[in-house]
Length: 235
Image (cartoon, rainbow, N blue to C red; front, side, top):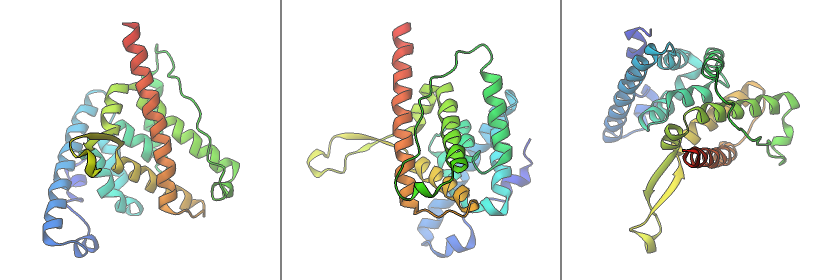
């Protein structure tokens, strides 16, 4: 179980971040952060019941100095209703503890289950991605597959978290709504991927990584919707 002190280490944006915000923005961010921390504590309570300490591992991850810059992104994904196990799957690319927990979760939850159908998504063959070694490409592809498998374990819950419905920005369609992949989840995944690539001494523009992760999650959403259609058809 995470100590209360773990949560107390993160009571709001860092001093540098505070200096870049107006008082109103800072107060609003504080409210979001506190709400996210409360949600993490609730998730930890749920995790304790099934021996899957998601929130504890996330807090441990954020307590590491090299990852504290990701705190706001992680807290926002929690506040935006992204399932904790899906956040953990994303974090697993750069955190050994998260990776081991996700492997254990998938191994335990797959007992007696029919394996989820996961179609491969090749790493783009543009000039930038060509700089990756075969081992690096394999690591990223395995990471994407892990995210997919975790999401497919609870397709309805994952879809609910990944899809954001908002009012259209088109002035000619003011009363209509549009669906989009959760921007904060794309952003978190992109930063996690960037941090992994940084450890490999490979540099990418964050916008390019965001485009890549958006493609990954658009495909995942289609797979989730197809799975739910099949389940509905079988009933």
